[in-house]
Image (spheres, rainbow, N blue to C red):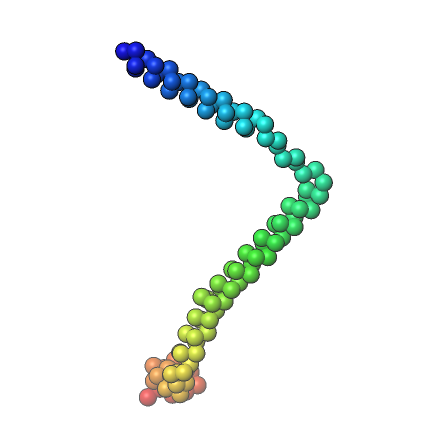
Length: 102
């Protein structure tokens, strides 16, 4: 029982010493002074920089994944598109008033 009691007190003492060391180290550090001058200028500058970077990234993503894919789809469609064959199909269906259907 005596050994357990000593072990308990030693552990408790060790915890208290560590707690005091941690508390004293946090109290002794000085806080950073707040920025009082040019605060609006700094915030606006940082916001504009982040907006410019975001716009550039989004523009590149839209160009690569949307515009280039759409241009490729149009190019593939018109590569095989025969306007005269389409005209004949529509004429045979009777879609034009000025052309007789067969």
